[in-house]
Image (cartoon, rainbow, N blue to C red; front, side, top):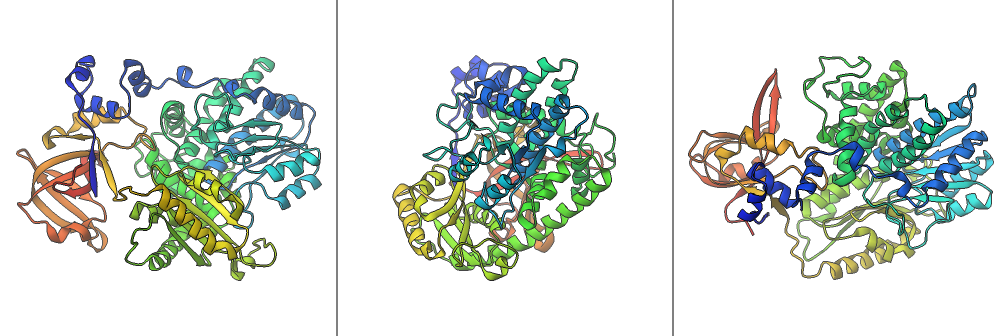
Length: 613
């Protein structure tokens, strides 16, 4: 692994900010925060100052007018969501808002008689709209379709709706195709001339901007309602969707997530409360409605972005991967404690099943890849019976291992067709997902190959697709490999780690940790800092954990030894290290908490000497 160490800040820069911890200042500088204004915005996010006006979207006035008109006329509104965590959170934001407002327009009527939700089945229907579902919307005499976290790539399906007299508002955040759908309004910060100054909102973030716009009008129509409170209690959904979809936690996203985590730790949603209980995680739960038990594991510790990424989002995503995302959506919006408990149990069971199936597919994919990759710049594998819902996870794992873009496709085989998977022309189809690396826009590559696809969509770092025909796979694979080889030609593909700062081990204590924690929330675009300590002497080295997979070290540099843990690093390093050896360690800082005690923990990222560049 190559170590890329950030250039050290100069004395002139340090002198400009004498009141900021030197290492913290280095971390801020590494993120391009080189003025007092930028630093203040980053360290002290302000909800009133940092959140942009939703009406900066060029189509927002049209979207708001059409949605209000539909509610006032009691037209049938359908919200079309997506099956991942961002999609179900987006759906929950939009549905919660529309139902809240509908009863203000129409007291005495039931909102659910006029407003419905549709989330496609991941394996049976795939991402976005499909023509079979669109035909059903027409039969149901829907008047207005509002998409969330999807729609920008559904030109043909939206044309069918429009031809049938159904109006469409698209809210999405995915990369825009060359030709946009002819919707009545498009709210997507990635669309050219969108008018919005921040392009990296999640699907939930975009749905929230529509909600903000609707609420700004509602405040004038119904001034006695606490619309400000209603808006802020939606921020737990926004934080979940933004972190789950790996959006950069900078600028507006940083503020939304920062405040969203506060709301999440106080959440009044019984479904989330039950899910947290089942996952064995908690928060301080100040406020809320008191339904969460105070004796949860980690109950004295705030939920953070790690909690979302590795504990909450996988359970929400598991619904769509194993069965149907409706389970996750219903959990988010239910106000019935018994239903919430049952749904939380279902999600936990689905997550366990997802883990087992993912491990199986991973093993089969690795057997295809073999021992040597040669000069390949992209990995492309396919497998019979690999559920479409899991191939993206496997692609991510393989990409992390080899530091290459990866495409994993699952064949639509008879066993899956028996489960109801739609077929075109009676032949097997290939549906897949891709994960990329920094500097390789996989969506731009897929756009060059769009003639192969029945459908596709995604981000620069992740994509999904369905081939028109499985017979095209070999040609598709060759063209993809040729494009990757051309674009990544001459690039060193060795895996690297970015080191934020070189520190003395004795200086990596509570003062540094407390300074670093001002940078929360950590996530995409603002990773937890990694430090380098050199010339450490090992005092203890041993494998620990189940099957001895982890590595425990005690090491020092003149002062008292500090405890390091290297997860899944025993096989790579334990045999080569002994007491008294001198080593360099790249590490992250964290806190280990148990029974009210707190101690600093140093997580090993890499061990070696002379690896820096």
